[in-house]
Image (cartoon, rainbow, N blue to C red):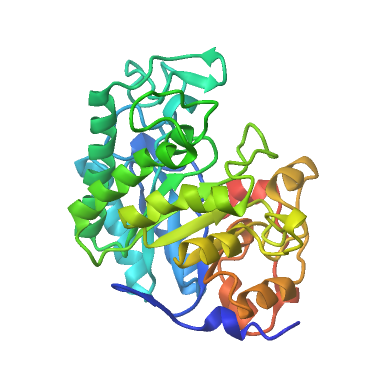
Length: 368
């Protein structure tokens, strides 16, 4: 195995000082009854911090808006009891020297009306569309837009007050922020619709509101994707120029790190140009911001294929090391491998990749 030294270089940005470049990817678990993260949730994140993970991104959490989630077991990031639970999580992670940020996740129209902890609330959508020509809700009013933006800002402020190290905005995979990005779900005629750059304004305004709530030194991450759960081959940007036009409003709004979600980190984003850079590589080049890459790290297949085939085997990280050493991206997020290997980082550092446990879907439900 190629030396993993690049993974263990410190990383510093604003108030964030990480001991290494390894990030725990956000992964929904639905293990917070009544939306409250309990002692088991705190132990789960502490174990990954003890195992050497540089930065933990929590599972998606509901910002302060009543239609944010369809699942009563997804944790809220608002309310006295839920925030008290998150306070325990922070305490446990910090007790072992860890760093942690919540991911704020509004599902938008993916949440079906009548579901979640507030079933009477209407679902939010830029244009009321689940996909092009499929209307399932009413378009968000200006008041709705303002309420959602305020909810993100409020929850980010709560995170700062609790001692988290920053916050991530979930703008990927077909959820609310992402629904504004796509012309198939965003047909608005106001400043939030139109060109690809204009469709990024909702995310940009959320970022500005969060920045106002937390001040200049609290890191703001934003996760985005080309692919969607509904369409693995989808592309927001078909060329680097289109990608740059999409990223510019986010950079100008004050995003600090862009988390570029891909199913397989090694796949080139624009292979037709003769480049093997992935989405995080192109995003770093075009935006000038630090980036996080992700996708099947140390596993031989992506999560969809793994679920269909009942698991994934351990694979080399030599390609990952090569891409990081040439400066394609700054941080790498590890998902499923950290489910079954809380000490993934420590084992990789010790050269014990062969001792990692392969991933299986059952592990998601059974392992702490």
